[in-house]
Length: 188
Image 1 (tube, rainbow, N blue to C red):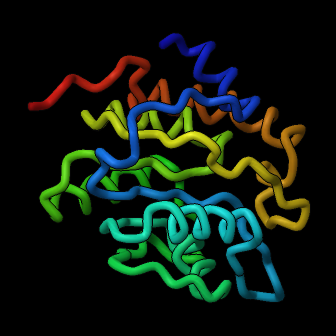
Image 2 (image 1 turned 90 degrees about the vertical axis):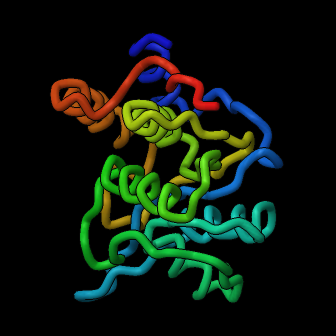
């Protein structure tokens, strides 16, 4: 897939679903924004939607999820089972860190077919990061695509804010060799 097509998907949230979740054996989930209240950070409504997606559609798989998503599941009364938290809600973690940590956790569990759960606008970048790490994830349709106008992370407040940041992030990832534009090789 071309860089321009992936960037278009990341700027519009119109990603390409792939695979069937029934074939997945592990979940890797990244967060989208967080709300600041004084000196504390909280997951926000988009992370609650990501948590709800996992709990209602993929409840029985082992998973490695960004801390904001795991915390949102607890705060909304929908706790996840078999979950490993990645990072902390108080720190800033980048998608490539969450994907790499998630892939490492997946391998430690002896799993091979991850299901990627992320904000629709973040899916193309997470997919490219996972491919760079030799993993071709299942990407379900209908992932959350809302924005949070109260987010402490400006680029997660609206598509208008995201369009400024996203091309810069893609450029950095290309220069640092963190992404691949080609599907990961098939592993039997």
